[in-house]
Length: 249
Image (cartoon, rainbow, N blue to C red):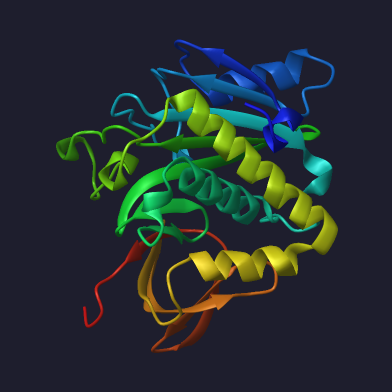
């Protein structure tokens, strides 16, 4: 499949323990891995954010890519969560156009389908590289009993192409938004992300360690941090687990 994904060197495996671990090892042992993309049709030990495991419901997307860290901006958060989630969102829509209106980004980089988690992103730094791991439930979702939160799969919106085709769509999306970031800066990424995320005024809860903040989504700071309008005033959140609440909850 041609297109912007030609900028990536995609390698496909029937099975890997973790696509991100494969890329991490490549970063440590190979000279230049910029543009490396690794897809596993089955992933046995996928990793999620905050030390969690990524559960594979079967026939899902397990894709990791490597890019030069020089594009990542000066602050710790960087633009990568937003660029990666835009590319992911774009690629999934290209794969199943009927998902339009059902997909939404949750800060900073989860993909929801009708309010339920469908995809997640793990971003790691290794030397001069940034590793972006992307996982999505395509044909099926993990059993609900295995998880803390409701989940969804892309097939709920229609026929899903072969996982390698989906991976190419996602790589095209990543290439598109990486180029936009280079050419127009983070402000354009921030604006595009806000158009695809939970609306302003959405009730949120932020949890992390001893943190528990409840309020309304008030947008993004210029560096991408979450703005939360609470009863005690505006809070700026750099990290944490986000729960979307029903209005009036």
